[in-house]
Length: 177
Image (cartoon, rainbow, N blue to C red):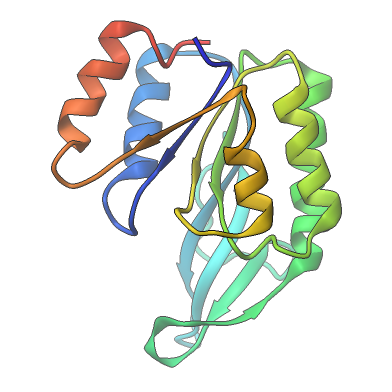
């Protein structure tokens, strides 16, 4: 069994939903991060970072916002410093607290120049604590490096297999650390 498992697939197929569902049923102690969308009071929208066990925030502060979307939904601005501060802090806590599992939901292109964050991700992957996460299906050097690791398994989620994957991963115990 592989120590680190990432779900991948196109936007909106249910990767994060499947991850949350599996983790809820296993009842493991966890630490890590999640990225969530937000819509601001001014109508702006984007993504923010929070700890994997924190409840969603309706109005995230600038210390949590990692990206702003422009017209048409494209990422207009990336706040690398949030990955380098909050992101690194959340991952370092994983290594100090020794949870049963580390959550990384999700890794993508926005971290491409967040070197300290990338190092913290690699430190977690190299630790004794198994990682479960979501990784975008993009060819980006940082993501390619993760996918190339021998201790990483990538499972592709599609609209056709997402309902089948849950019982397969849960009942087989493959997703358990």
